[in-house]
Length: 367
Image (cartoon, rainbow, N blue to C red; front, top):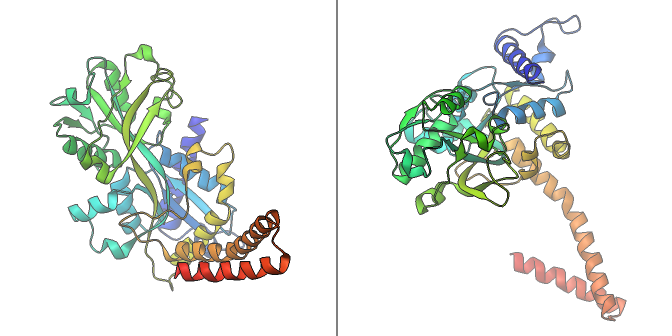
């Protein structure tokens, strides 16, 4: 299962590099590959063990219909690199990134004019900071001066871990190994701990047991942390092999965002991503059913992301959906009002006048 999944992503990456970036694969019906490329959306996600890649795979499974819309999930190297890829690479239309990456990129001046060039389609879910440590470490403060893996350079984990340790005043010796290698080094005692930002429960820690000698460290809450991150918890329901029933580990969470380049409306890339947005929003209920990742149940498509600007087709779709629901809402409101007055013995003619007065009062209150 896992091997086939990795092969699918590898094929997606190869196709994106060749089909999207260059001329495209021709067919008998479409010799220049124009239709194939106009319906293809490349999505850069994360590492093979992370949540991003599972979300991207779900997008392909649900939305890919062949010619009209073809979704190609690709492995990525973390939020910072994904943001750069969305801006700079021809084959990347959408990138899944952490919500704090835009502020980080602006602060570090990684790319010019980011407010104009980067938009978002939707906030997806929250991802938790996991700090897994060896048996000799009991508190996060014990990591001062020790080797702690923070994932590869440019990754979201590397960015978030550096910010969190700075806010807590803990100076660690950062290591830049990929997460699978870091877990092996932690087991061997070559590093004291590893940081990993991923939606719980992450596949990487799924098979770990208490007998392995590893455990999660609590992240103490502080005013500085809460200005940027959300409080969260890891429980036995997430990792029954590492956390005993009834116990919990406090940590922080950061939002995952579906980022997109802010294409101008008259360009084909804009129209292509707009079609993707329409398909994604229209068929969103399908992501809430098995076997899709449980993190989809946390998604609120209308949720705003501070510091970000929503992609115009996404904003327009939400406005139209809200307007379409309004008549139903008004009808339901009138039915509830009718039931309310009937229970109190109000005559029908008087009830109608009362409802009209209620609507007038409500409109004035909103103004």
